[in-house]
Image 1: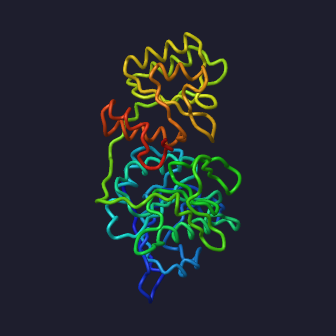
Image 2: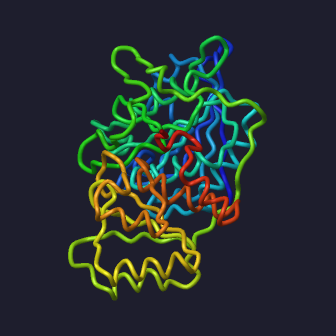
Image 3: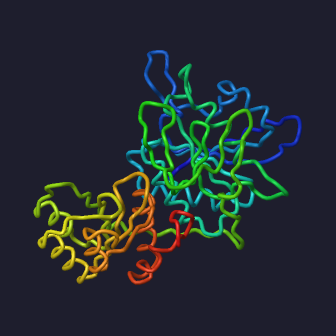
Length: 354
């Protein structure tokens, strides 16, 4: 994958107070209108013309752009790997990272990076926009400026938020706890099962008690993924043919089962029989609730007790985005048995334990 790189020192003539790397992947954020009114990718060399207040941050900003910006609907694991490798290669020189990404799949990429970046001790802040930066009412300006401030903020020479997170519309959320929940308003993301890491108003109020501690050791990167994963979303009246179409996918290794309420599913003999056969043949089945809030509690009701008895793994309060990417990363780097063991363990704060 090819990139374009430029460096902007907003502190000149003073020395910068911190160094932050922006990774621009694409998305609504970086689009501007040309003379004919067509939306074109933004030229980051002109960033100070659009955002002159960046000078007040006193940062040295390096921008690495994907040569061909990606609509986030086209993001795949190769792009997750590219982002991870850029962070790893520039880790020692930078104090923090901001990833500009389309909102549609931002929560998937943030979740994946939270597992991939082992021993992370610096901020990786995802942000974007609902309106392009060229629009008069665009949310791009505030999102970027605050994301840069969060990525560069230290306390006692340690990063204040040393984890992968999403900043959007005045809220900083843990990346693997966030979901896109709004397509028309600026508050695009929600985190139903975990509190905000910070809220930005007149000042940024950090919720220090819920921020992950900086990891120790040298940063490393998990680089392999296994995409033999599928999702089966249950609904009343689901047919045997629909279930078969998923379970009989060639090479399928893991299934995310999106269940009702606190992890409930039909108790029809045909449905449980098909799940049992698949599990007996080695398929990993992970139970994730369709509800945006709450958690899976297998065995609480009769309609989930059967799943527990079959060997379905509870996903607790994980989001679908966190679950899918967790399975893909684990299967890419560990055995099936090791993957099963790790699915019920919080690896990067994606899951409430106990």
